[in-house]
Length: 172
Image (tube, rainbow, N blue to C red; front, side, top):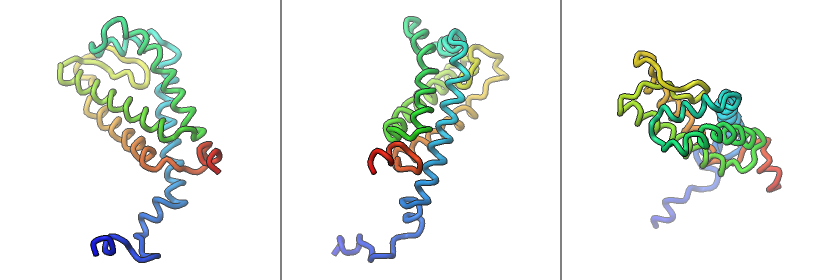
């Protein structure tokens, strides 16, 4: 009897669920995919031109050993640009969403750690970075912004099928 109650008669599925799972949801997914691509593209391109500055931003967090600062600082912008390109073409959307979520959680953790330890830095998320005057720190705004980006990644993780994607073309 419980299984009968869990099933809904044909055609009575909630309208919102049909919209999210159907064509409307796939268009929303496209918008989410392109928005997250813009974030990664902007972040990566802002740092790629000056890898030394990107490494300085990583160093400012005082988390990684010095032997990892340059590889992370130099490599991260290329990873961000790669994620942006994969999202634009819609290839491996769910995998990119997972990597995006892990990166964003790492960034949120890093910013939270700097805030908790009283380190005054600019996050370096979109270029720049490093030590700043304590009055110029914006930790709460940066964490909330990254939480918003994390929601975009979560959408794509749960609903990776989007319009105009290489994934859809490959599975057709």
